[in-house]
Image 1 (cartoon, helix red, strand yellow):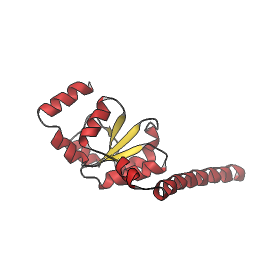
Image 2 (spheres, one colour):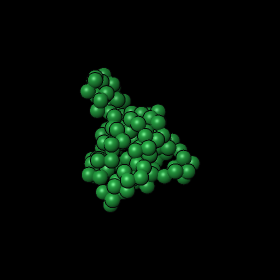
Image 3 (cartoon, one colour):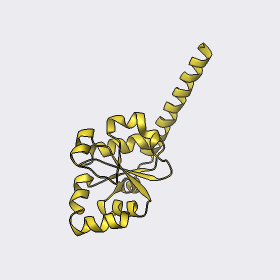
Image 4 (cartoon, one colour):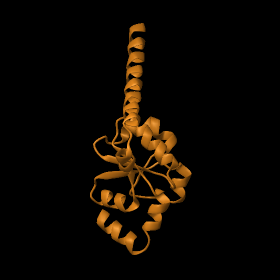
Length: 145
């Protein structure tokens, strides 16, 4: 039993070290190009979603998600991310989003440390909602289907 527990401890330590190594590599190699590539605009996310090149990860609190929804987004509140991130596909770009960008940046860094291809929505869900009004919303939904 002690051997199993010790092996489990070493595995957990190994995973933690790997995550920390990924984050260390990302931060130590951070430059202007990395800064530019970590962001996506509302216009860009629409094209990525239409072409199925990314998923939009809505990390708002559950109450926020219930109050106003983004039905084309994957709903995963930030506090649930540590328990649920493995539900996400590592083979597609994930764009994290919240009303502004504070939680989206936290989620982006967390997922980056886990080895995901991830960016954040730089104008937030409020910017996206502002863009998706009237004809633009109709056009987007038609293309999404």
